[in-house]
Image (cartoon, rainbow over all chains, first blue to last red; front, side):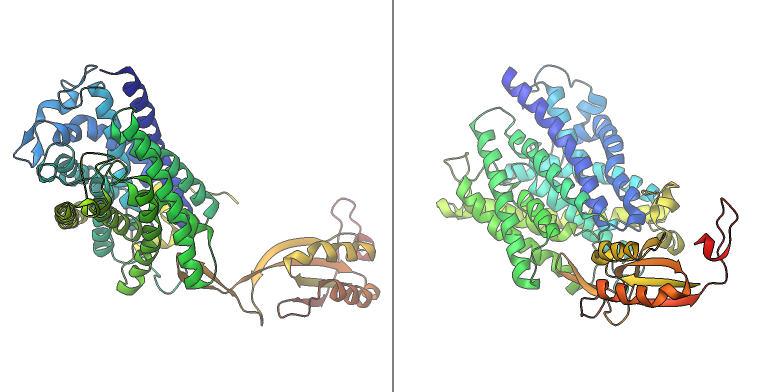
Length: 402
Length: 112
């Protein structure tokens, strides 16, 4: 056990926790005023619900002893055997600390999905879906990639959650947009953000918390953590520039929302790569990734699905590009793996397989779950409630008293 | 007595207010309003998607004055609020039957 590592991961866990209220602000500012609280709640309630699900069953399914590369055993259910001593797999920090660091990831991942179903889902449906999704989709994904499952065995690289967090939530978001359908009035009335300063503050908090997310994924206070910290920052910085440049060329004006979205896109892109690539490749990834995600957001207007707050465009496109770019830029000077650029083309192929498998599994499983939840409790608010806004119809309150 | 409803560009409010105060207008009611005339709306762009916003923000000033004050007041307001571009606003003038000051019960011109 290492005291410095323990202190560092304790702080990182708190940083990652702070991302979820940051996300609540980010998403909350993007919806119309009548849905600000329901959208905030979609993130904030998961600090409660997902944390408990994780402690009771999620952690053991993800990080319990491997069963056939598919799922973790139930040894750690109810945190049984998860104590102050290190575990067998992570030997430098207390097992409880590793569990709670991972818990914060399990909280924010289902919250990311909420951007797709915002402004029209019933609260009880959102709750039931999130609990089921954590058990059926998130825990297996975390096991496959980090818990010694089959993707881990294959050698797929995912430093902090390009597949586990971003592609998985984006695939679920796409399923949500498909199953729920478009918001009432979509294409006829403008759906414009009601409070962009809130969104920009949220993006800033996400950027701040992401240092815990990515640097903390080194699971030690060491040079690799510093590398992840720097690549995270530089990739986000480059993506701010490239998103704003892309929209400046495309629509004629640089926007604040573009800068905030570019930051998040860059952070998504670097997530799988942070501890595998060097700082200069991270800048290249950000420059490409920011513009690519801007294109990804425009995609929904072509295919006419209502991914309300662009989870697919930012997290899906960014996560996929980041995973593939990891297979290109991974360098043995940083970590154990090497990518295409350093003479190992097979890594890119492995990354490609993990991308396809993640999208397929998460989309299909999430889509089935949405249908199940719809049959059980009804997914969508009725039109009158939707037009009145979910704040008043689902929660009996209003965000602003004017 | 006449009521003037003066709709102007928001950034002209200070200038128009000073002008009115200089012409012995004793009080006014100001409201932030939205609407459109010939200027129509404007374009907003969020994440590359364009939205037409039909209603432009404007400021509406309501004042009630004695008949004799109307002409000089209107001239002064027009001078202060005009930029010469579409969207400068309008002035609606209508008769007022009576005015009553709640505190004292005064009515008519005395109550303005």
